[in-house]
Image 1 (cartoon, helix red, strand yellow):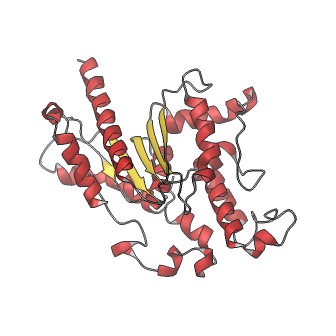
Image 2 (tube, rainbow, N blue to C red):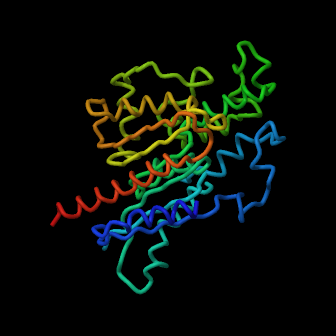
Length: 305
């Protein structure tokens, strides 16, 4: 992530007109990864012998619930690394500008893979985060885990008819985890646990009653925010299909003329033949989006003068 953070700063500073707004990029290891690793088995999947894969993965990244500057780029995943990101947002300016009255007032998160999952968490649960670049991440934990359980041929998946009927609520995905995902996961919060193991979307517009339930959450979590979602069509570890229903539902909801007029800017870009990696084209898209987000901040500042 460090090269990407450096590239984002270099890309921004290339244009002399951007000098009025500084860009700070911060990277760090997510919990139980890299220099912070404590228990290697907790990072593994069911196939590699970790019986608590679903609990370990979600808990490691879930979020508990002046001159313009800022970009927080983190290799994240949520009580975990997204909480760390929020702590950075709280205290970073006091360390960077300890002898100045400068403040950081714009925060963008960028995460890859596990970091992409956590970037969704930061976007939804920290009101100070105004934009996010999500790279090969997933906003629908129910669908992602049920797909992995199917491919792993877990007994909790295969020993029912039809397969997967009793997966949610089994020891592989306990009731306590269901509650946590419904409380914090974007798709879980807005759409609940899927009736089918892999969530589907048929273009259905929420009923008036559904909109009344969902509207406060969308207003609180996404009002006026910018989102860039980057996925690889050949990604087998975090397949696009697992988050597709939610992404399509959200895209339809926030599009011009959609039922949620909350000023949400959402770009969903799929890259053909790209697997579980951040390709050069994805890097270009991220740099472009970050610059556009900060330019929008510049324009907003000028309009107030």
